[in-house]
Image 1: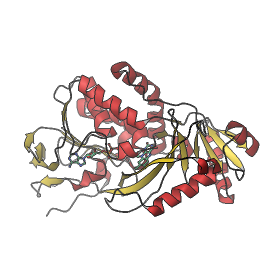
Image 2: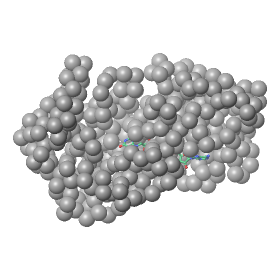
Image 3: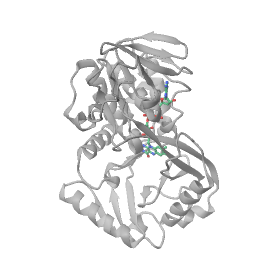
Image 4: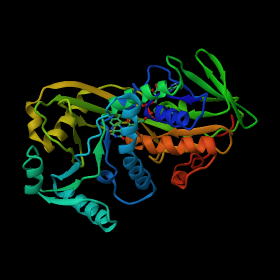
Length: 373
Ligand SMILES: Cc1cc2nc3c(=O)[nH]c(=O)nc-3n(C[C@H](O)[C@H](O)[C@H](O)COP(=O)(O)OP(=O)(O)OC[C@H]3O[C@@H](n4cnc5c(N)ncnc54)[C@H](O)[C@@H]3O)c2cc1C
């Protein structure tokens, strides 16, 4: 039983069905793929964002490098092109402090043999004439790419439907039931459903689902919402070919002429609203990257809630205390990027019991047990 029909729940459902699991059922409380996964920018850029090589960086690069096959397989299965765009990511320095960051990133990544190029202001402008005159230096990450995440969600929904996954929408999972350390099922708004395995992929709501009875000593890693707002411009002809990052914002060009600008990072509880302050911040940061946005019509704005665990890292794998309770949540800023590797490794853990060493740092068992009430 999978709780949550975002990119994570859907990708794991697909991976389980592909491994021959017959009775995969996914429960979604509203419609599939309408929360954080819908709001995302679709940037797959572990290198542009990383300050060091650690377990998270390894997981993220592994997932990015699975994307070509993931996209091709989805196209084969569903005829949907998820628009994997391999043009690359440009990271620009606009202020004095930005330059230091760029130099550090270039240094550690080139020492590790990762593909990254340092560009002068002139080279950056030759590559992307839209960048601001203030750009002093830039890094080009040719392997950091992007996907059209809404097309990806459509493709995943089609794929899991073709594979025979049972999908139940408009149904809220209220609690997870267990008895003497073994999962018994889930209580939903339409009644109790028995099962032996429960996968929690409910994004930012993952820790709002209760465990019953309460004296079952379950681990419930706390997941909190971090709001992100986005602006969408109509950019025909397109302003940029690359995804362009600065330390404060980013621009993402879509094939159909939409240009996304993001984002904010706000602790605003579960209020999924677009605010004047958020829009102001995004516009200022986007304008700093490229003054060309000033002439573009704004055609849409939205907000989504990123699921963040206490240490900002994903929560992936089985829980020690309750047999059959598995988590795949807390993907925070990188759920689209991490979807393929999460799907593969969590499906493997459920089907064969083998926990990949890649998951070790992300186990739910790193958090303290909830007190028995
Ligand atoms: C503005 C913004 C930009 C982003 N940009 C990027 C990006 O460029 N690249 C990237 O990799 N990531 C990005 N992210 C992060 C990414 O969107 C998330 O990490 C990812 O979507 C999380 O996927 P999920 O399936 O866990 O959560 P969601 O997509 O939120 O799905 C969880 C689902 O669970 C359902 N659910 C919740 N509770 C219950 C319940 N009790 N019963 C039944 N169903 C339930 C919800 O309705 C929802 O559909 C961005 C996020 C935001 C907000």
